[in-house]
Length: 226
Image (cartoon, rainbow, N blue to C red):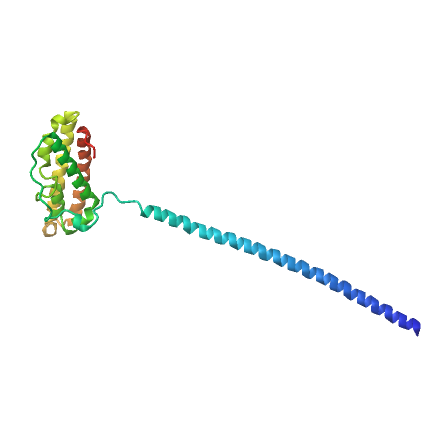
């Protein structure tokens, strides 16, 4: 009986030891599993943080670029429609004066042409007459009024009178081409040629661009600072 009891006790002790071993192994497995899960969560958190930082960084750069672009001023725009030349603007008197006054009149004429080009869409919204107003061929509101007389009086002031004369001839040709296209745009809708006013006004703008180029050459010949 005693031996039998000892055998039973031995079996119980062995079973208990087996359970402790199993629990120990199980606990080690759980700790490893928890450690692995923690590392996995930490890696996911790091990857997510990196991803979010990359996503945030891109809009900041774009916003900075947009802000930089937005603050750049456009070339010589009128501050408001009220500043544009119209038939209520003050008259420009016929020119009379010396070479210095003639150069100043020409410099102001270049400014009027630059304003015309910078605000062309706004100016032509009511038709071609406003273009002619800026060109000095309609009314007396622009410093372009009488400009050929002004420039002809400056021939002797040029560095090279031949180059000055050639540039002046080109300027005059483009001036009257722009005037002609702007004038025709006023009657285009009644013409049998079926030409759109907008097409003629675009042609006039191209002539004004070329005219302005030769004004720059003339100003260079006169050593005129713009």
